[in-house]
Length: 146
Image 1 (cartoon, one colour):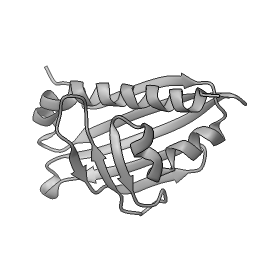
Image 2: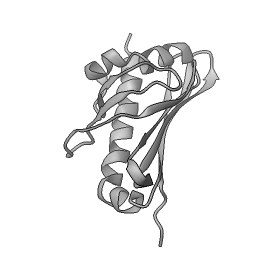
Image 3: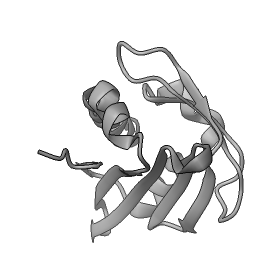
Image 4: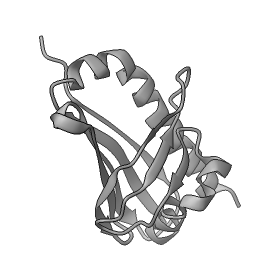
């Protein structure tokens, strides 16, 4: 039986989409609040190369250099990390769906392709999902603090 090669999480955040976007794209401050993407450098613009350090709970940090695919202000940010020879590719995305002027649904996920995606996901898939959930909760907590 094939495992689904996508992880998707979501959370409701009581904050306007503009504030969510401002925190999500302020990469310099990720180390202050983000327990999963513990460091992110580069610019949030299509075509830009980023340097991301991810650390799922119980795992060693992993550094990779994805390229921003989409950057639609207040709506979508995505990047693609890939390994040579199409071994493993991760399309990581963040979508902000407005519920009303002061509430959004934050959708955070990743689609995996490549011939190593099955074995890699089997090894780190659960920890990655937990990392996404931890990041979502930390983002919510940061935005809802008043």
